[in-house]
Length: 205
Image 1 (cartoon, one colour):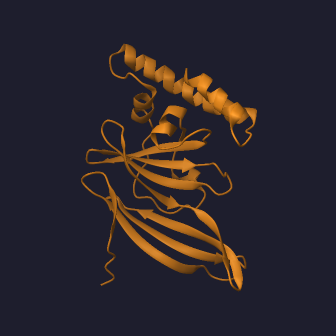
Image 2 (image 1 turned 180 degrees about the vertical axis):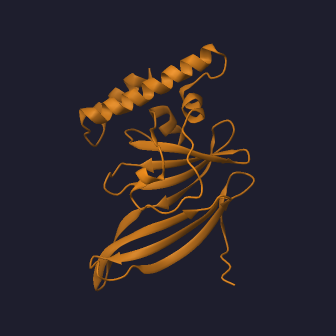
């Protein structure tokens, strides 16, 4: 039973969570299970993953950077344990997801990893029609950076167009916030016909 697995994970996890957190996770799983059962009886779904992914709210494109303020991107839903495993996570997890418009035959998800709630990571996933993960790309993260005469953080700005042209720009921000961010690198990606997220050459002409 999915709920029992989550409770066992909660008691053995490395990080302790408060009661509200687990109540929210259980509520999310129960809702997904209820939807799955409803569709199963109607002959449409036979597992939690299908019910969850096919009933996610769909956000809009384009996507402009919001930094760590991922709530501004749209309406996210708690990710059940089974779906978290599908996305490559083991054990305790605190994930939220929102669907984006399909890219041809590929479902696209925005997933927020809240393992560190102060510094969340944001991922773009592509899935097949059968809900198998095809590829993923981290589009936002913030990491500490120590330099010889300074220290600060590296963070990413992200832009996603209506055609799924993905631009990631990494900056270094000194601990002295009076200093302007320093450009580290810029990369561009696109989702190909196989659902893979591949890097493309940036043409500055």
